[in-house]
Length: 305
Image (cartoon, rainbow, N blue to C red):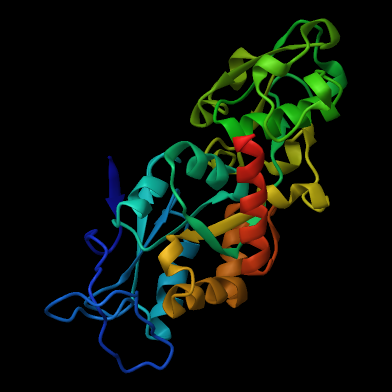
């Protein structure tokens, strides 16, 4: 697994019992080991390992500093793609991660036989359709090619945007689980291909348009206002696309991890930085933990049939 850690080297998650530290809010991961005590999670000796995709965004450094000001030492660990942070969390290389929405986590849990859980919400980010050639959907010619991300959850979301824009029709009206195979060719204006999410922006010169995740918009020099179509983050049906902090099932009530969620949600400088990194498109939400976990359970049940 290829990744790089910022500020401090990555270390395995301590599983032994924790000792107290001189800040009232610091809690401990459960499980006292048979032997020597370990430093409390969030202490300087045992900093929280937070996995993200895109740690170069300046607000993560602000977040680390804000946490440290409250007595929580934090390492933000940068991963190169979406496939890495969940296995790293499950294997104990991370304490928490923040890079995915509920549907993505549900898909991971079902396919990996895992039980990672959301403990806090961040924002919903609209996903948009972009083009180098056209300024509106109506200008796209019949029979041209449009691309979507190939990961299951964002592929479905992108297909629903294309259907709403009148470019394609999907079997049974589409769902959060639709794939390219569900496109009804004879009722669609364009052909759809799925490619790696990181390649959608760089593929723009070769296609009519592309669904591009927010993570890749800024690096590609795109402006979210240039999207020729996008979904509506205020729609209640968008709940499965709420981005979340996730941890292991045994750590869902850890005081330090939950305080980090609260800090992210309430620190004005962190929120401003996250909004800027999203190109101003993020819609911040504070959905209760229990509601997030219920939503995850419902999506997992749907995926399992």
